[in-house]
Image 1 (cartoon, rainbow, N blue to C red):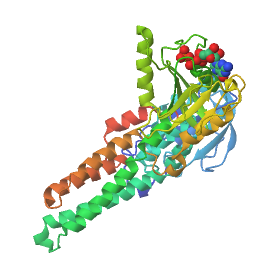
Image 2: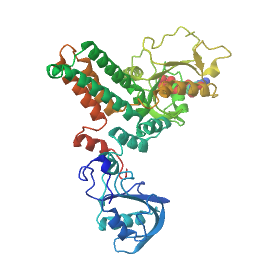
Image 3: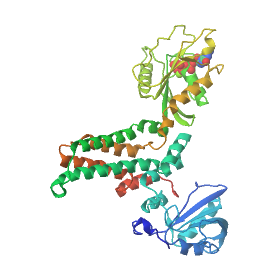
Image 4: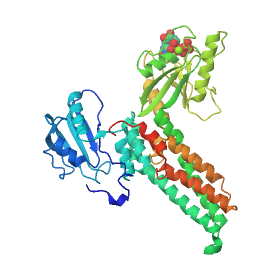
Length: 452
Ligand SMILES: Nc1nc2c(ncn2[C@@H]2O[C@H](COP(=O)(O)OP(=O)(O)OP(=O)(O)O)[C@@H](O)[C@H]2O)c(=O)[nH]1
Ligand SMILES: [Mg+2]
């Protein structure tokens, strides 16, 4: 077998003493199913399962008979051999497309097991790709994110990360930190090398690195929104039509609606997608004074939800004749608030205040505009995010550590400064998976699918 000598990794380090096999498509019946095999024994095993296959005709599909455990033909399928190192894992690989019957898949996988392969662990193909230098850790994580993406934005950010854009940001940071560390260390062996230590220069470069880290950290909120969804909370007085609007946006009768004020007490939550962004929409109890203990608790929860919202939909019903143009609902924070005159069919020809959207769930008037405005608000800032900077949760924690180290750098104490910069450098290298413990890798790959 040809080994990727450029990676300089021993085959034990590169993960693949064993040859692994797994189905890559979901369990159950389907039109077709894909089975993947990777490892040093692929050639020998292929000779048993698909003797007609010419493994040296790499990266080309061949239609061949597939044999099971006892050597009898189980199916005819399309097999693509990927000779190392030009494969996903960097090892010799096969990708088989077979008929999607659970029986066929089981028999073919069983054949591979009997021939000496073992079942792959979750994410083990990607883990081998990482060990063989095919991808770095940031890209490996992105592969999993891409496989589990449910919205356009989740897929988009994962795709850009999988392509290495975020890795390049982290690598740039790592290189800058390494250069900075060298500059500070030169002060420590100043006598030997007669290199002049320039504290102002070190201070400037440290500030530059810190800016870079903070720039990346600033995108954490937006990427959390893409991942977990933007929290959009409907608030307003009792009976203002909150639950009706909630049901309308969600598309089914999720919440109880009634003409009695104080119908909703618990927080209700539903997920939807607006403009490619995942949105977690919440319906709440009507705000206002109440003597009733359960309703009071509902109001307390509504206020908590409003405080945690990314976007507020503040409702005032049109049959409330008061002018709310001066309404400063939830002013003081910089979260977007969409002011909605609900039950707009009751406006009786009156105009709504400037800056308010007139919406009627009864006639449907204003709903498209509301959806459009909401879509603009939840996706605001995401386009500029580009993807390079779409950091995940693990990245945020490591970058916060780097920021704390850099903020503590005292250029007049080079010894301590070097230690802090080394801490920041370690964090950057950990991000890329250059120095990372098996426990961390186990945790990351445990969330992967089998066959990925
Ligand atoms: N005319 C009109 N009535 C509406 C509209 N939307 C809701 N309603 C009515 O207003 C009443 C209250 O609606 P809900 O959706 O339960 O109001 P809510 O704000 O959730 O009320 P609470 O949960 O009690 O705070 C119901 O009788 C609805 O049928 C609308 O667009 N036009
Ligand atoms: Mg309600």
